[in-house]
Length: 164
Image (cartoon, rainbow, N blue to C red):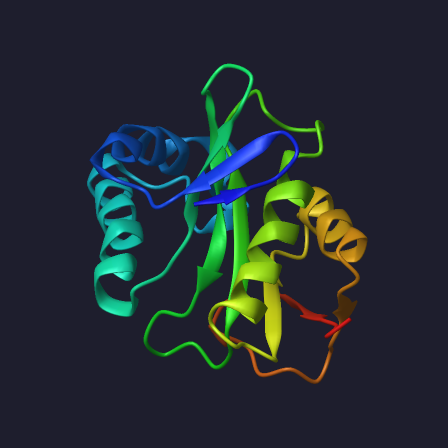
């Protein structure tokens, strides 16, 4: 468990699956590998939980302290085939523009450095995802145009997180 001023980041359990499915079938997830049919959304939700089983870490459920609302997910992510360690984030519908992504991702970056020992962290962001670009920049990350693409068939922006 990780605590911030307004949030608690928890290892996800089966209770997050419905939130993830709803997210991945929605249009708002198009820039995060979503906006997919229900069966594909189920597979993506299961993959989030499976990442924890396979790696021992993954995206945390992000819970708002004031009312225990699950606002999204954020955390370290390194599925097989990815070229670098990533810290990612997603927000569920209705929780945008409140600083939750920056707060959660900042805590997740600290966790990746302090607990996992990651010295090199990137954020993979869709070219059109202006909100996530702002989050990465608020975290101190810089665009790395020379970085290896995680999915060359679907190029993205790669923001490199400074060690500071």
